[in-house]
Image 1 (tube, helix red, strand yellow):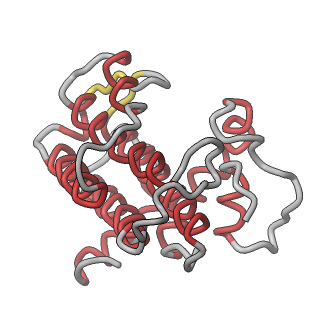
Image 2: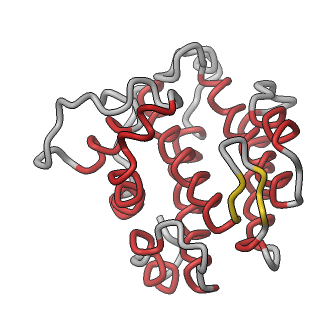
Image 3: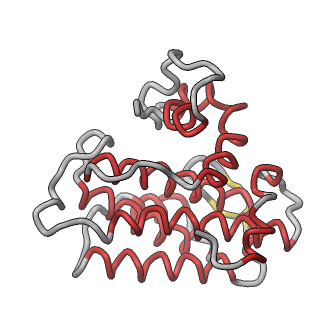
Length: 217
């Protein structure tokens, strides 16, 4: 999934980076690589959506494939706004604007290209983002985008009935961040019922991650 060997070498540090407020330039580059890989996971499934599949239901209650795609487009648009200093209300409006003007694939690509460019701007890692959850630096916010995009790549795969296997290194890096806060995620109400309690350490990491994020793979 990663573009070249240099990216692969930087990506092995994903799990160690966590949400460091003092993220180095090299660490932030690795986080950007993780987001690129997460985007590729979603986009590879998106390219397989047939004309008659946009209204299929997804694991996200009440959302169709089109809605799910619109949500990630909205998240990318929210990213640009937050890194530019937007307030929470404006960010939320972008995030939940579940409409797509034009071709969904092209719109997703344009929005995520702009998101990539926004995180590549000088100072993005230290930018104060007024995220709907709370204020946080860009170096933390980027990992929220990685997690959201990766989880929704699985949602899309499940909706389409295609391969659900996600990039193992990406999954491991996100699980390293999610495992310590899994109980808190469940209480947030943003991830369904959170962990089911049915899995132990012998379960595959992808299955444990998805379970913690309210999915039941």
